[in-house]
Length: 102
Image (cartoon, rainbow, N blue to C red; front, side, top):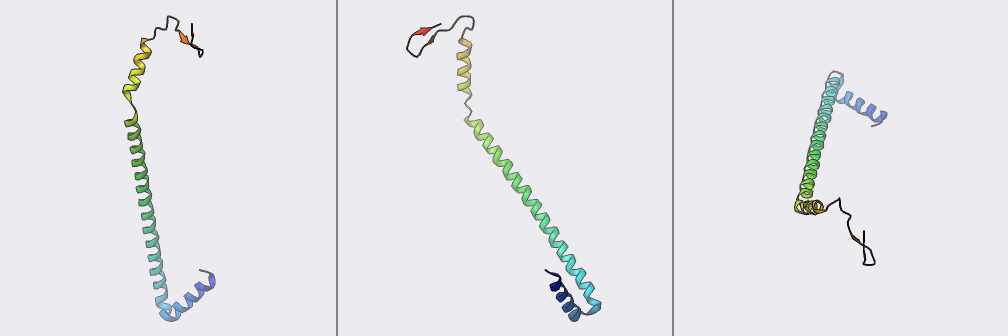
């Protein structure tokens, strides 16, 4: 609202309510506005907390999904293969042409 609109509202309120009741009406309207602002702030805080909670639940679900896809037997098999390798002896590898080298 601009300054002129506020002046019109004030003048109309002064004419309708009179000089005795206008300050009381203004205080009442300001209380309603403050109460509405407080309620909106409370609702916004609660929604933010709910969204944060949903985000945490989604992250936990993703972590559980990753954990279930993690195959421990494959790693254990790989570790067993690695423990069979004797690092003291040179290993023979195949060259791309099919011959073995040391």
